[in-house]
Amino acid sequence: MKSLLKKMLYLSWVLVLIMAAGCNESDKEGTKVDEENIRIGEEYSKELASYFPEEEGKVLIYNGFAEYGQTLTLDRIIRNDDKLRLIFKGEIEDVSGGEGPPRHELIFETEYIITKDSVKEVQKNEKRRFSQSIIREQTVLKLPIEEGQKWKQVVNIDGTEYEAATEIIEVSKDARDRNLVKTETIIEGIDSYPGDTYREVKVYRKGQGLVEFNNIILLGNGEDGREPTSIKFGYRLFEE
Image (tube, rainbow, N blue to C red; front, side, top):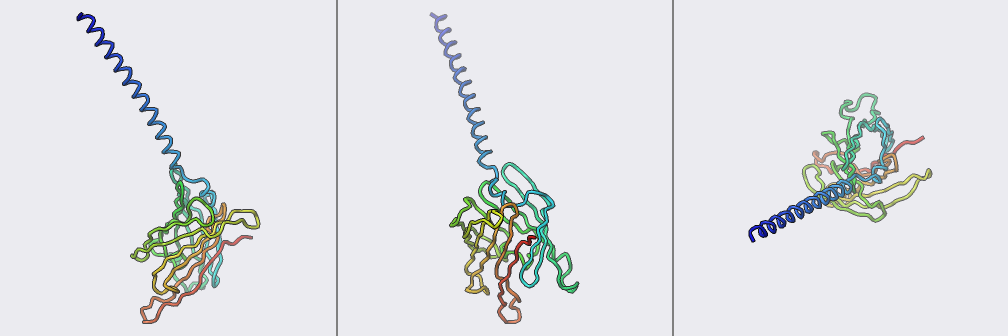
């Protein structure tokens, strides 16, 4: 009788070990699948990345309002599984004949961070240049790329938080059959801008990134008791 009980206990113990091993293997397989799904799910969007240059050293030349000009160079590309970082260094053309600001005040840096579903633009220079957006950090593109796509975000402007609303207002092709995406961003409740509303319009082209920028800039800081003057400003990519 004791021998029979020992055999039954032994068989039960073996069955427990087998079942436990099976569960462990199942857990491992499940973990592998989950990890794979997470890795794939977080991979940066190749569609969004296709709207930007992919060659380090690429130089873009822009011309605009009142003889404004700037160059933008893709300085570095940093690739990870979950994001793609494009770091551009730019310089505003000095048309003053040397009488304008020093060169270091004409240099700026912009970084684009591409993730699985969006593109964030970050101004890296410490002081904003007049030709840059008043929004230092913002999501500029978001999937799906289609007309009517909208998103809202909280942005910080000179230490104050506002809600910015962005919409893809046009998706088209140019004469060379390259995709174009046009966005409009609106921030309400900002003093000194027409109707207390700031607007900026951007156009992105497949393989080139930002090819057109338009907004309102303010001249004068109001310290003399007069309201700043608002003027329309813009520039676009020069192509031969």
